[in-house]
Image (tube, rainbow over all chains, first blue to last red; front, side, top):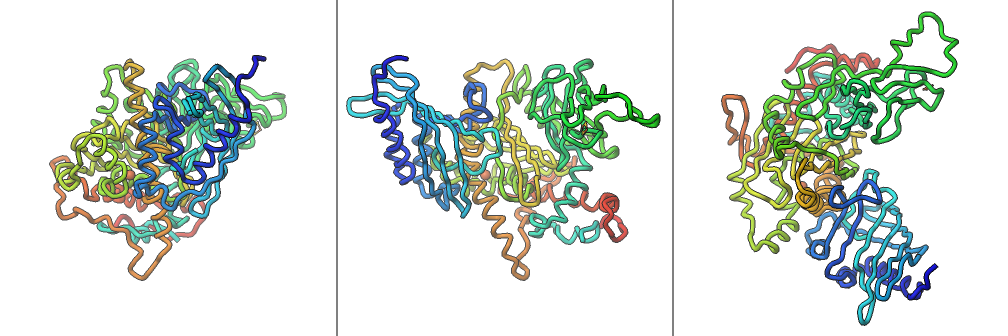
Length: 160
Length: 407
Ligand code: FES
Ligand SMILES: [Fe+2]
């Protein structure tokens, strides 16, 4: 096993902070965590697909992710009226790969969402590619492997 | 008690009664009088491209298997129900298999449905005819331009007759690309707690675009610097009632939603819009499953098809910028509102533009795109089928008044 150059604890903290932004509705702050060439990806039907030949539930580059957040904050995104309340639980954090300034970290998550008086549980595996900048970590990509990505899904207008 | 006489009370030329979205009896009759009578889309040839390929699907509430014969390449549509004790014989969404072996007692069927074997051959009497114990085939299968349809009714119009004036538009979809199209890029799958007709109506309802989807179009203007003039757009665009419940919305230019220049509803539950094939599955009176299959161009570059996928995902699917607002406003809020049943307040309007309809020599009815031509087309076919025959109600052992014929 290669010598870990980063402290797992530190990466875990980062994931916890990211989740807190989402749960507290601080979407602009969340968006700022992403690098300019980042991706936010939720595959459809199965975990491992080629997004160029297979449809995704979400395959946002930074530009579309900004649009997603802009829309959520526009006051006209009816899919979030009423808004979802969410709690993200991030666990089983594991640093898969580590270079000077790059880390691939996987984790399991449970996301409890409440909307229209209906509480829904989502779960799956996250894969974050993180990049270290001068002062902090940034998300180069975030992949959300939902365990129910091949089931009939409901309104997923909130953020994972 | 719903029968052919009183069902007409739910449909007027200008409005439909709210109960058609909430009444379980009406839902049951839709399954028998519509889904078991007319042609229903069950899959595209590209989904079962190779010998032995299969996919599972449903018509109404009947589970089915669509297979490509390993020997003849013929397409079969059979009921997914073992002839022994009814267990489904195929569990996968899709795959490739020469045989389906029932995991209960081991009866085995070839992928054309024939019963080929069972454990312990003894024990059945002479009258037991193995040849007659294959998986039951649906009475009729038809393929139009690669789109596979099945009918649970032995009689009725041919597939070509049923598709009628919708055919040239299906041809258009297929001819988007010289090498043809393929539905091989997976699917968006979503469900909502509402009646299936809400999704079908919503497939052609340009009237709601500038309201429900304002955030999307604001975003488009922000990007392009151009604002869509919806009032002008609706005057230029047409909706056409193509007959048999099918309807067409002709777009006036690119809305940023997809590649097709029209939305097409093929009655009862197939749609073409954006860059997708949309299939609506009624599950129960207030539960609906929806598939969106992005249409891929055969022989096109990976980049071109990827761009189609990105555009599709931008508006459609369980996290698309458009679909989520339809789920909330068009379905959840409508289902909630339907519970308010004030006197004279139980009707849903479909009258818009009735006065400005034009009819051409083929009988195609046209009005502008904010008009409810499409909903009227849907409910004409709905009413015709729902009042055509009560025999299904009878075979289910219910009492009913004799049919007096169509009103
Ligand atoms: S139910 Fe299929 S073999 Fe018995
Ligand atoms: Fe819509």
